[in-house]
Image (cartoon, rainbow, N blue to C red; front, top):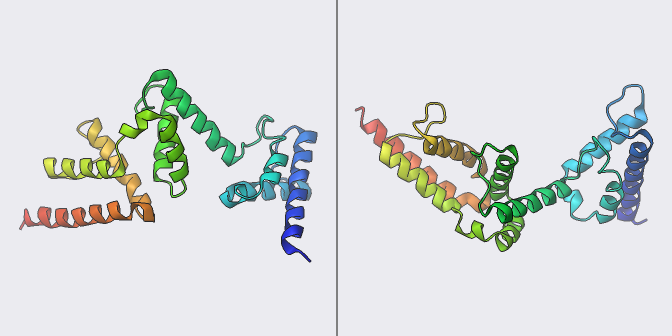
Length: 215
């Protein structure tokens, strides 16, 4: 018995059940204590879309699900959401000849900026960034992670303090505080190990420096 083949057929069956439910009810499945089948379909779909590995080798399943992802209230598949953001980011830079800003008054522009920020720190974002830079020349001039680390250290040395997001003196301090908060979470990834070690060393030296001031 080919176990992988059987497993593939089972997944296809679940996908077909999902599509049939949406086509019949014109909505996505939800938790329903009075309908075990609907609850089962709901759990299967939610589990499936949360596992990125499912989108790398299940093109047949994706084609089945795509039949209903345009129905109102049905969650878009993650890979399609990423492609939509990717296309929107490129379109924005071409139309406005600038990169989206996180401080913009336009909600869509802020969302695009945040999307790029998340991708740039993601351990799965290298291929997306590579393709973006090929299509958005402005990104080639954008600060690298090393540039951001330089800016953070330079600011700390200049003001002899760490940037604070609560009582920031200006937008630069607020930005650096927010950047460092995010970088602390992402520095565990191997791709940022060098920058993480550099900041760790700086923080240890900074701690000694400020403690010496109160001896």
